[in-house]
Length: 224
Length: 224
DNA sequence: GTGACGCTTCGGCGCGCGCCGAAGTTTTCC
DNA sequence: GGAAAACTTCGGCGCGCGCCGAAGCGTCAC
Image 1 (cartoon, rainbow over the protein chains, first blue to last red):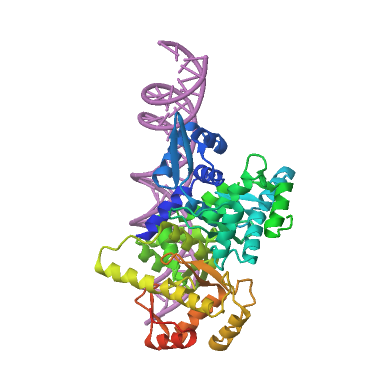
Image 2 (image 1 turned 135 degrees about the vertical axis):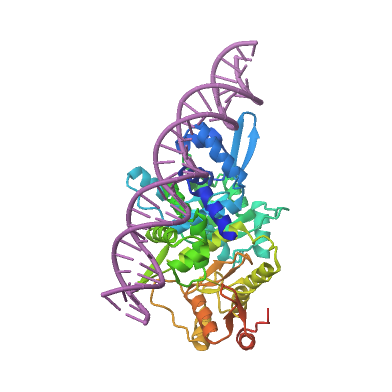
């Protein structure tokens, strides 16, 4: 019965603490059990039980290292699903404090989504690539685009089953942006080149002056 | 806190009975409370409580008519979300009985998804339209496509906020197909013209001989 | 070794959910 | 009017979940 599987899946996320864990992990990084516990405001024992449940359901992946239990989303599929659920909920309600306002504005401007770029920045890059015929109709990479990525950013397609390029829905922009191996590569290269930098400790990123120039040169992208 | 909203949303679907309700309603029709109760194998009182919960959360819409309480998905957004969750779960495990096998094969061949066509049929129509430049990159209707739809199928874009054309993810084909007002219109016209017919009582549909000819004439579509 | 640290396991508490049957309300049918 | 049908409300049952604190276990630092 598919309904039962659906209910089981939903039940995984139907708890405030587990939901917080998953949203926290949307930044694509691996967190330790205790970090997640403090972030969600529960004790270590509670967190441990939740993590075990999420992991044995295959939604999270763990990597034990010494006395630490590192945990992250099992893969892009899971990140995708979470983004879709957030997209259904719609843009977050207007923030009440000044601090929260600037924080959410920063998030909307640019952020990482699991392992690729999202927000206005992610959408702008995707649009610019599509305008230059680097991306196809359905956000697959064109031959031209593959060559471009290889030349400019040293991209080599992975041998794994992971799609090279695929759309991911943006919950602030309500638009598709580039995910998949290519999206992840772009994100990591832009970080490595110092073209984008994380703002604070969250998922928000900003484009550096150097990055603005590079993006203009490469893609004709105007500063956001 | 967005995590709390996420948890609340997930909790809506985190029950076998409510999940069955929602999947049943994916056919886009309105069902009465008691129909859903028998379909899910619970008593009327239980069904009533679940429906109240789903409705007050805004996930379902109700229309009271005499002594009946008709209920349906609140809108395309909800259908979309359900399809995404099903897509995450992946293709249903191989059926064990012959009857179930033919039933699921029929579903994969063609079915309604909320109010438009899905399965191989839905994807094939979408692809054929894209190949003829009736649809754009991101599955929006081209000017050419709008004219074509108006001429051949008597389509007029709605005045509502509903998108004329948008992609919907197919959980059997893992491909996008045409949803939105245009997708809904195509589905209803194909039914009205007798080009497709429901198989049994579920969401599966088949193309009639008349429909095969018409689809070949209109879109160059070979029989599936 | 000794202690601190990170995590897990266990027992226990309390709440809330899902279910039912019975009784009540509203509508329809005759 | 009376009876039947569709649905709702209520009381009650039982289970399971989420939480914690305490105890236990492996790992790291000194």
